[in-house]
Length: 354
Image (cartoon, rainbow, N blue to C red; front, side):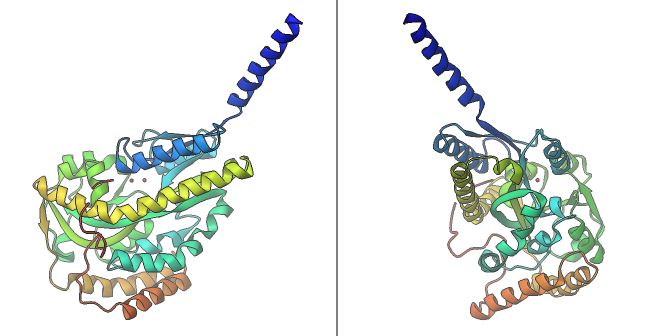
C-alpha cells in the first residue's frame, strides 16, 4: 500500500512536469527598448496571456533590437529560432506592397483623417498575412516628423542633405528620388551612430520613437509637419498560433489586439508630450513655410500615381484610399493647418519602433 501511495505521488509529479514542459513558448523580437511605455504594455499582455491560459502559452520578448534588424528577424523566424516580430510595412514590401499605402509621403493631414481611412481599409490591407503564414493583431501608427541638424522649412532645405531612409523602404526611396533628394538607406540600429558621426543630417520618425531610441540627443531642430504615417504591427507565424487550443488562440488574439489598439490610441498623446520633451531638451521647433504642405501634397499625387502605374502597389487601392480621404474632407471642412500628431482629443500627455 505504501508503495502504491509513492507511485501515485510520483505519477502526479510526472504529469505536472509534463504539463509544464508542454507550455508553448512563443519568441518575438522588436527594436522597442525595454522600459519604454510600449514595452510596458507588451509585458502586461504577456502576463495576462500566461495567467488566462494557465501557463500553457508564454510570450518571450527580445527587446531593443537584440535579435538584429527586421531582415535578420525574418531569417530567424524562417528557421524557427523566433516565431514573430514587430515590423513595419517596408519589411513586407516584396509580398504585400499595399501595406505601404498609409505611409506614402504627405498624403494625410491629421490623425482623424488617418483613423477614418483605416476604419475602411485596415482589413483590406491585412488580408494577405494569412497567405504568408502570419497572424497580426492590428496596426499601431503615428506621424513621423523631420529631425535635423540644420533648419528644414521646406523641400528646398532638404536638397543636398544626407537623409536617412529605413532599410528596404523602396517606396519612400523612389518617392524621394522623384523629389530629387538623395536617401541613404540603413537599418534603424545604425541611425544614432550615423547622426553623431555626421553620416546623416536629416531623419523622419515619430517624435516619441525618436526619444525612446535617443535620436533626439543627436539633432538640433524638428519640423512639425506630418511627413508620413509610420506604422508598426506584430506578426506571429500562423502555423505556431494554429497549434494552440481554440481557447488559447482566442485569448492570444483578444489580448494582443486590445494592446495594439491601446498603443495606437495612445500614440497621438505620446507625440504631444514627446514634442514638449524635445523643446525642453533645447531642440528648436521649425515651422514649415506657409503653404509648403499643400504644395508637397499636390506634387506627391502624381508621383504616387506613377509609382502605382509602375506596379509598386495597387492603383485601385491607392484610388480607394484617396476616395476615403476625399469623403472625410468633404464631411469635415476645416482651415486647420496640418500638424503631425494632431488630434482633437490630444491635449496633453508622454513617449514610445523596426
